[in-house]
Length: 528
Image (cartoon, rainbow, N blue to C red; front, top):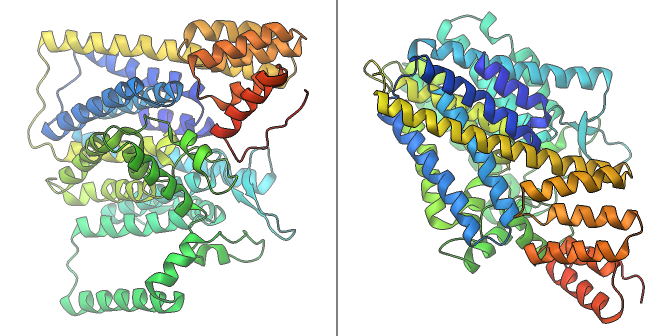
């Protein structure tokens, strides 16, 4: 029930992308952890599990530490809040005993199938938020994205489910166990996600390798030769390595209504530009990075085209750029520990489905922003937890009373932090929604409450200023925008708002600052 409620619930809540989701989804595993500790049912994880949790704690601490040098403090705090969700879920996942690991995987598969079934229903019967990424072509359809809100994220979500379904069916030697693929494969196709198909292939190959099937040597040689020939043929077709690089750097084709040519394209859909800016970000701050979550600000300053991008579309490169080599080392060690555990498993056949699903997640995270989509990451972490469980060789010991007390104190502290984060994020969301509805009064009240809860962010002050401006209080709005800039002088939106309520030299100065921070944004130059 834990993966079904957590992974499935987050998936149906816009994939967990919005910060307002992180509060309840962090509290759920923390409540389970606290209850297990109070009832004396919690057991110490094995060595790999201890290493995994320790590295998670270290990476989370380093992310929060980057607030000290970050170019975007508010976003760095949000990155840390999301990591609290992942750490709490990982710890709760490890409460599962090894004998229940396969049922736990079935829970993840059920959650993925539920979300993908809902996606197919939306495609069949229509509904708001069914699609994203509309092509400019009149004959183009739209890519399936709901309920996660992002087509590539939904694609890899389905791909992980396919690997789990096929792996469980192969281990049980039951065709019926593979029934979820009847839902998952159509969803994967209608996302038109090339990266998800690549992740699926990597996951199935990884699961097969762990199973170590007894394939006759001539058959193995034949399969290897066929694969090598296929790769060489593709390289010749695209004009060699340089041709492949040129195609990757080009724009992606539209998604046509009656063909799937996009699936055969080698275009990186602007990823070359994202990665180039991320590398420049790292080169500028090679030791510590520019702070967790700061990629968007560098992108706004350096982007070659007016693309509204928030993330570098590569977990590993973005981590290097934002929290430096130390952060990347911690992340790689964290994500590698389940892989090492997989090869220590006493029952590789039982671990194979989880291994394949986890590899699919890692491969896709290298080329997209899965880390910012908790539904996908929680599914991947669930697979990782199963690998850690299968690596345990002895019975778990109960923690000592002192360790139980320390663990309970930590759970309580994290729960209070999650509640505070939930209140702050909800207040910000309420203020923004009220402004969108043209209700400045409620927006002003919510923004004032958010200011108390998240004093490190300029957003409450900026939203309050916009509410005051809607009420005609220009002087009060100007005061709020200046206070927002005192909190964060690099917030281009506050500079643009300040220009709107200023005159003469002050207006020109504010416009100049906004345009330096975001040179490709069409910021109107109005007034005197």
